[in-house]
Image (cartoon, rainbow, N blue to C red; front, side, top):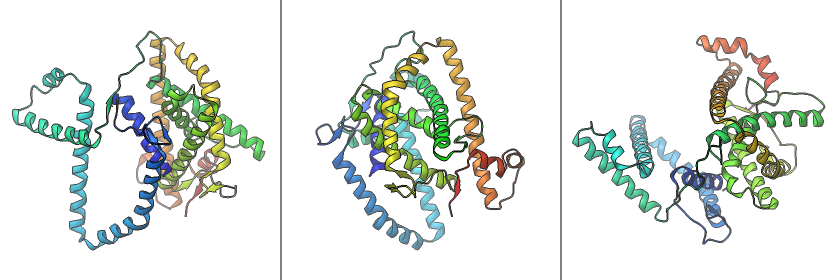
Length: 360
């Protein structure tokens, strides 16, 4: 229920931000949040999830194994191809909503008449599907005018810089907290290059995107929303890290009011407090600081940080995957893996990720 609600809320904001449309509206339902989510639908998603996991999935697995392997693989490839075509066509239609028709005609002038007709048929079909699926969608226009200020509002440049700053601040906060609580200094970094905790970075960037329009709401609203979103976010991060890396990087099993050791009530409250402090104290200061950067310098500086962080994430992901492979006695098969074994061996990885535990 929590995961579906967060995805629905994020999806609604994403569609409105990038397409300037709203495809569903729960404003007339009780216990709704700005029409993006409501309690009745959240409970419905939770019920569907329970039925799917407990009853539907076992039946589908049994049916799946009854199909001959060749037919089974053929069906999967066909369905995957249809899904990819559907996604691409939908993306073209949705993005094309705000593109002038003459630009399409100019860009596609070289296509044959058959291709144009086929494209028209596909896009028209998908457009009708979107109209039928979301009849309540409303056109919403951007309200922030362009000015000579760098990263005004809540755009890419500001959000990415907040992500980078949040990653750095989060690592420092966690390191000091561990020192005060456990009496030892330990790395709390998510990345192999520098003190960056991207869990915090994504959290601050995500909460800024999702709650930017609510930043002037009451402290209690921000606290409750931050508690809910922070708990859901931390739970998802724990699940994904276990699936991808075969390790968990935190475990709250020994703390009261925990959920599978992935989250606990106390730390959810910390997320709520952090949300209030972020919007009431830290965000206004950082936002004003970022907007004071010269446009040319700010743009170049941001893209330098983008390149660095992307490379940092790639190296960290590769090192963690290789770390897990070494634990499974899988030998290095190429130069890059041998490089990782030399420069990011088990001893160094344990220093960077001291709380990482292998999942059996």
